[in-house]
Amino acid sequence: MRNITEKPEHWVILKIKGNETYYRVFSGWRGGYLDGDSWKINSGIVGIEEDEDYYYFEGHSGSCYQCHKNGYGLKDSMYYFSSYVQGVLENLIEKSSGLVEVVDEDTDFINLLNQNKDE
Image: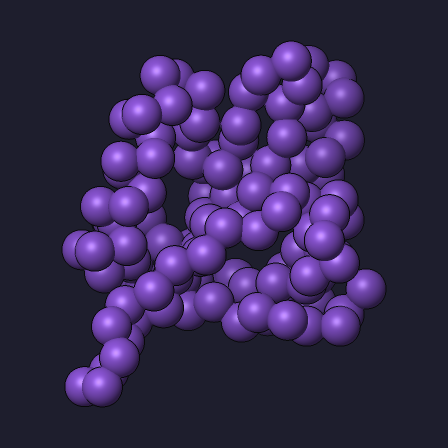
């Protein structure tokens, strides 16, 4: 895996329910003087690895998101999304009518895909 395509500053895992349940990385970056805040959502997690500091999420498209373990972007976290990116996330969840939710940060991300098979 480890052909890193994205290194988000802040991130969460979204659980998306439908005919099947799947997971995606929602990520955000704070902009600077010349560029604004930005966000991305990956194509869907198909593999997860980790080392001491990072999780590596492989997407359906072949992307690999290198996510720092301290960067999980909830509001009450030291590392959190900007108000713009938080608004995008909240809007996405609200419009999903309960089909999209943020995975709790205490989740065992390495076994996330296996947990889904047990549901």
